[in-house]
Length: 132
Image (cartoon, rainbow, N blue to C red; front, side, top):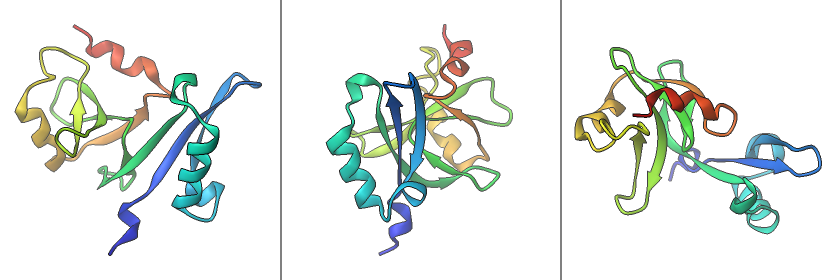
């Protein structure tokens, strides 16, 4: 089995510094399991912490795509957040726009050359332009 597909990163909010930090297992601990264990013991989603899984895809520049990343597509007018939907057991694009949110063609964009331009924790305002 190719374990490189099972990667995680964690956004952890430091309450003392009042600032969040992105941690990747390779920079923070010896394994993905250690990062998951640390996150489960020390972090809470209620306080802004978030665990994000690698989708198994890379953007057009070779950057690994994780849940929570914000992407743009060539020849498309909106940005999207990569989200995991357990009811579909799949990572899908959420444009945060009612006009495009349920568009099945938007999900076909996985085959296109998308570009990661940020993530929802470090760049939360990027998706505001999509509202409407």
